[in-house]
Length: 268
Length: 314
Image 1 (cartoon, helix red, strand yellow):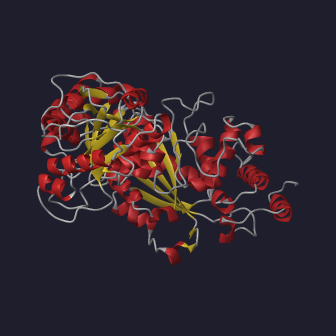
Image 2 (cartoon, chains in turn blue, cyan):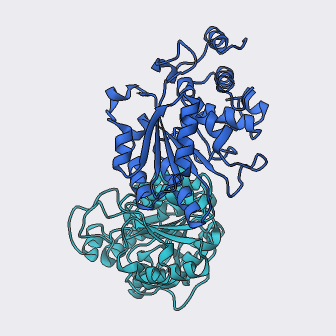
């Protein structure tokens, strides 16, 4: 099986969500391919040392998608089987939102609008240290309601952080409904371009397109920060979850867990 | 005091290229020497304090030692969540400077006045809170902050009231500095601009031992216990709300270890109503010398005679 297989990542997410009786499944499913391609082919990491000083950074700013990242960190060997199987049990270390005390998680997020600034700081540090590190930060589209993101966007352009790649998970939903109904975002690609970024929109589930976008963006050291707007499907991969925003909040039952696992080609 | 601050910044940057000064577009003349000495270590982040603190956290994660400068109303108060989540949860070596704390911006109104910052910051785990009273304490608190390699909030208030120490001081985290001894069983504990006021009270005849408290968190627990064991009452003075500030710290400690009457003198639970000079606003808040004297007299007169069996000079 291909490393960081999307179906497998979704299965791990379902296993965690079911055993932990937790939510945010749809939020994790929309970023699976984005993270899978990043961990498979792009992030320069030391498998034995999550804190290697010259690593590429992956900042998950939409911290509620963290189960997708846990699945990748598990595959890297930085999280144990027990971490996954005991998710949400008393005394365990993996929380429902991104937490920087977990190896491989660069920022504490979930309160939204933090990650892009931290990522800008990491990218600036790489510039000052004259290293070739790339700093990726994954934000949600709804998260772009937070004004601090736009402070960070101004900063990234001013300081020519061309090693900063912002990935926008544009699944079109936020907690209480469609992004267009809650707070209209307009054209996100154009907004980032207006802030001085090099920007592109891709299909957030097309692994070849994602791979090409990462390649283009990380190699273009042209003085401009980068934005990849990934159009995605909230709940992608399981038919009854796709485009259905209740899977922001809904917990799995034995029936829905079995049905979802079966759709992914596994047996419950 | 501001020269001491500038000198400390320049010295820190010259000694360590990993020291970076981040400002939210404030500190115009204050940073002239720094920008001349180490322009590459100076970063103006623009009027965007939330981002500035997040950037500082990222820089610190990658091995830099950011010093983040803003007005206290903005750093730390506006960006409390970034300080908590981005900086303190990871125990990153970020020094946050909040300038103009208290009523310094007396003419500009309450947006720039800051009398809640100690209360906000001292409840955040991992964060050290320092509050220097004069140029010597400024130098010592900056040295301490740089040595700690953990998050520090350094509160800079009214800075032109003169020295309270005769010369340089050494300071450890959680250390109180005694300025006057007394045979009277009263302790006067002050921080920031109010340390000068405490000495002025002594000059006007109050008989009490006087301490400067530049380390609000950690508070000098052992020293406080010793003081509390030999006095009959404690009076605190601060240019900060009486809720959650120095007085609250002292009252909490004293209540836990040797219950005593504690008189907390500071800003009561209200905003400034009027425009005027710093001295004018001190009067408005009853923090000028005559008002404080009156408040202390009232406090002492309310105490049972057996609690404070003394004739005080006031």
